[in-house]
Length: 99
Image 1 (cartoon, rainbow, N blue to C red):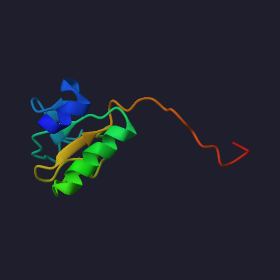
Image 2 (cartoon, helix red, strand yellow):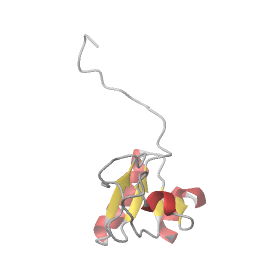
Image 3 (cartoon, rainbow, N blue to C red):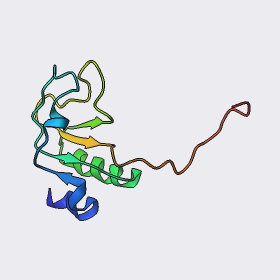
Image 4 (tube, rainbow, N blue to C red):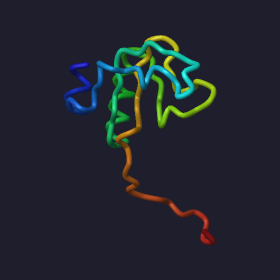
């Protein structure tokens, strides 16, 4: 956790009151994650993934946690990567000229 706080800050690493992240919005699926990381940039996501991959730590990405099949709920104790703070679009590639 100390490593993640160096680039995510205190607000980017949650270890308490994680029920919202461990249960889907229907209350049907329950996980047991003990840490939620909240990056603000794609660079931070990359740093998280490099660290986790190197140490073989399991992760589960989580957007709004509103899915109906439990795909964003940790099965065991995976690290949750919440995209809730990634709320700024910096670039959109328009590959279709008629849009």
